[in-house]
Length: 338
Image 1 (cartoon, rainbow, N blue to C red):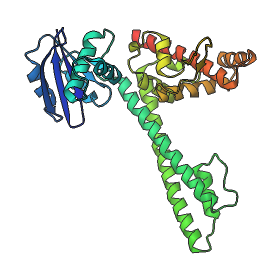
Image 2: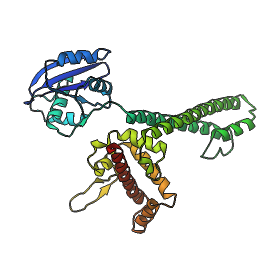
Image 3: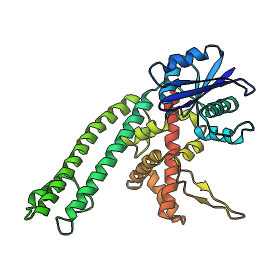
Image 4: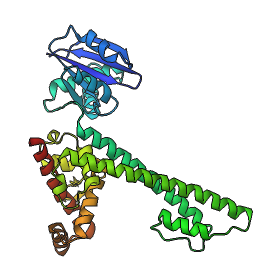
C-alpha cells in the first residue's frame, strides 16, 4: 500500500508518496488549474494500491479532494495539527517545506487508523454553505444597524431604542428636518445605512426560505429537539458534517465546545469553559438552549434544578447546552443510520 500525501495551496499542490516504512518514493508539484486531477492521477499511476492523504480536505484542499473522490480514489482528511505533530517529532527533517508537509500528511494517514474518509458532497455541504451565508448576512446587518444607530444618536436627542428596526428608523428619519449642512449630510448618511439594512433584510428573508426548503428536503430528525428550527438545524447539520467522525457524544461535545476543559492543578480538580471548538455550532446550541428555558420544557426544569443545586445561571446554561448537544448528536446519528 502506498500513501500519497498532499499539501494543498491556492496556486499549487505538492504531493509526496511513501511506502509502509515511511520511505519517500517520489514527489511532484502541480499547478492548481483545470487539469490538476489528471496530472496527479497520471503521476500516481505507478503506485498501486494507493490512498490519498489531503491535509485540510475540508478547507483549501476541499476541491482537489472532491475531484479525487469523484475519480474513484480513496481519500482521507488529515488535520493540520496532526501533520504539524509529525513534522515536529520527525528525526530526519524538521524544516517546514511543501514536500515535507506532504510527507508528514502521508505519515499521519499511514499511522493513524481513525482518519475521516472524504465522501462526495451531499446535502450537508449545501446546508453548510447556507449557514455560512446566513452568518455573513446577519453580521453585515448588525454592522449596518450599529452604524445607523450611531448616526441617529447625533441627530435625535437620546437616540433610539437598542432594538432598532428599519421601519422605526425610517419613521424617525421622515420626521427629521435638517436646518444646516451638517444635519443634511447626517440624514443622507443615515438613509444610506437604512438602505443597507433593508437590503440585508430582503436577503435574509429570501435565504430563510431556501434554508427551510433544504432542511425539509434533508428529512432530518434533529428538528425534533425543542428549540431547533430550520435555521439552527441548518447550522447543526452543516457544521457537524459527517457525524460518524465523532465516535461518541463526548467527542462531539468537545468539538462544539459544550464540554468543559479540565484545568486541574495539584490536588485541586476544576474545569473551565472551553473557548475553542466550533463557535458556529456552539452558538446554534445556545439559541436552542435559550428557547428551552423560555418555555415550559424539560430543559427549563433541568436548568432551574441546576440553579437550585447551587450552580450559577451561566453554569446551569452550560450544563443544559451539553444536554442539547447530546440530544442533537443522537438525532444526527439516527439520521445517518436510516
